[in-house]
Amino acid sequence: MRDTGRDRAGLLWVLPALGFYACFVLYPLTQTARYSLYDWNGIGEATWVGLRNYLTVLTDPTLRDSVVHALVLILFFTVIPVSISLLAVATMGRLRTGAFVSAARTVLFLPQIIPLVGAAIIWTWMYSDQGAVNQVLRAVGLSALARPWLADFGTALAAVGLIGSWVSTGFCFVLLMVGAGKIDPALYEAARLDGANAAQEFRHITLPALRNEIGVAATITTIAALSSFDIVYVSTGGGPGFSTMVPGVQIIRLAFTTGEVGLSSALAIVLLALVLAVVLPMQVSNRKARP
Amino acid sequence: MNRGIQLRERVILGAMMAISIVPFVGVLFTSLHPQGIVPEGISWPASPQWGNYLDAWSIGNIGELLWSSTLIVLAVVPVGVLVCTMAGFALGHLRTPGRALISTLFLAGLAVPFESAIVPLYYQAEALGTLNTRWAIILPMIGLLAPFGVFWMSAHFRGVPSAISEAARMDGADTIRLFLHVHLPLALPAISTLALLQFISTWNQFLVASVLVDDPGMRTMAGALGAFQGEHRTDVVLLCAGAVTIMLPTVLLFLFLQRRFVTALLAGAVK
Image 1: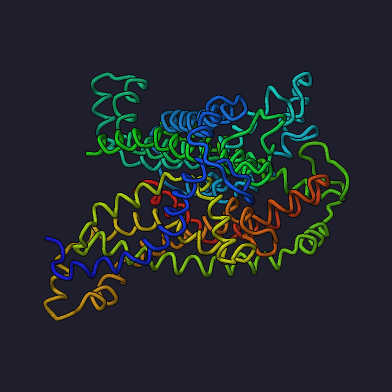
Image 2: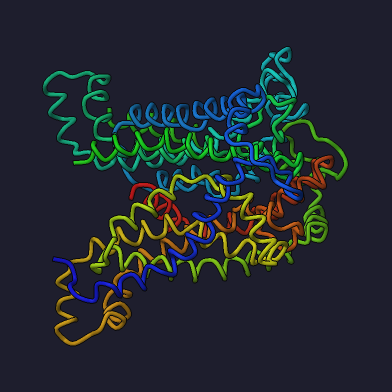
């Protein structure tokens, strides 16, 4: 039994947080939904257009591509960091604690601590014509590959995505490393006695034991990928052309630069639906995986 | 054999650390070249220009920015943490009617991209007259951070045995006293973690700051960094010096409190 009595009083305790949440998140969301049904430039008269803005989001190649780009970013923000981290954790085996390991945790967290704007500035310089990436390529005799990575239509999206990989990998790795540290060593010894090889150990012990951590890392980084804004806005602004345009940047551009508030809002609702559609199944399977 | 495993661990950890740290080293080196030139890759300058940092400090108005970010954080974090702790107490411990529904409502907010609310927030700030003031950042940030805060604090309060409250009730404590004298002291570790997480989210907030406030001097550090980049993108050296200066307070605080930071971020993720 929890605390009894004073039932209604509990609502008073929730009220301040609920008030802020309702005023600055829930109410604005209903406004976004309302704007999305109008043709409105933000200043003049708004005209009711029903679902036409949604039709535009789904059919206009630029807008549709921005949604596709957000999905592509999941590969860079989530799949690559989680795979690298899993590989590293599996190769390292059980980790001891010590000065080196705690120094590693600190260093690996640095990209996570600085603002994403900072990460974008650092990498904009790294990717530039005379930047470190091309410097390395020229040094190893691959100068033919050197290019301004963020200005090249073919490489810009991958280059932006890799900034996200750089930011998330340390976080995913430390998360999985801490999780792996909690696995009972007796499990590995038993497996070894049964003649299991490293790959079998990984599949049957490490991977199942880390399911919860993997789920958490995947959920957080996927939300970051789909709703990415800072990195793209600062490094490319969505260009060259629209080759790195993502919904987050497009929402701001449509609302404040081209004066298409209705269309911007429809895209914002589509983005919200997309995040929920991708994250909810992940959460459900996470909860199921828990003991 | 043991030594072999240790060496392998060190190599892997070392490689991952290098990937994290090299870009920082690159920016640091670049920031010390003479202004106006474009250095070739990562290279240590012939004569390091430490004066670039003085220029970046005055050109970027870093002192003013630090003050502005501090004001914003000082408003967001105490209020945010207080309202989330109260709500967490009611949802996780008291028998509040409808608490399952209210908890789900907050939980859903964890998946809301800020971009989905930002355009109405702009018109709202315009109507409230807070546009281009720090309030335009402060008030929405408290709301936007509430879902995680409430979720985090309810998880803490659900873990507190109800026998503790029953004993206090027996001694005649009302809900306010129960909260202040019994539960608040017990919740301090969870509260300080939440405060740290809200601090990072606010200090590093870019979208809300840059959409709702035009003057970089009234924004958060991240918002100001974006503006600095916009103005000085052609002078790579000065840009790097500015970026280092703006990021330095966060990095120093992180190194100072690193154990707490890492634990807080990991705990915040796993709950």
